Length: 261
Image 1: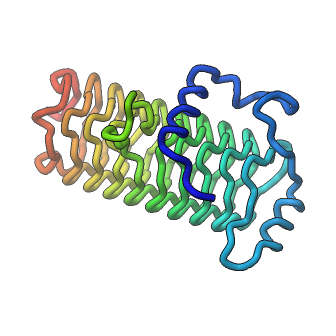
Image 2: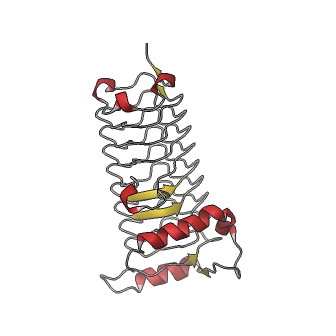
């Protein structure tokens, strides 16, 4: 399936923001997902000809144990996976655009080079997950990404293509303790009250991010870009590479940030 046009994604995202209960809609109401069992999902994957994407878009995984399944390269566009156990599953090169995954167990899952655009991951468990080079413009408020790998993740908002500037990565209250965000692009994100203790942000792009009340204690910020970042009450105790941080002098509300004396 071709990647949806950005304007279409923007419109659907706006709909989600206006009507948050859509993620918990019951079957028979719009939108209507097709329920599948674990075995049916495996059959689709196993019977897909080599070189084609297994078609699991707009499916309903709720109530199923989908842990450990190899979804590599699958089309999971707009699939409903709320609270599903998908721990240890392989989503490498998969399309998860608009997937509904709040509260989902994704511990140790592989998302290398996957697409997660406007994906709902609120309160999802992504401990130890590998998101290397994934497209990651997600809504992940309260998600647990402790120890996750987000190296070179593409989570930055392209504001030049957004009339309303709505498509951005949301990580408010997220747990990114000990996570690896080396060279990650999450520019324009919101990460208010985020836990980034001992995280690796070497070379990370945090331009224009709202980092209010986030805790970077012990984090490595060598060559990180904080140009125009909002630092209201942000904690930077015992960080590495402070003198190499780019754009720190342009950061907003820097006077209220907490640095070592």
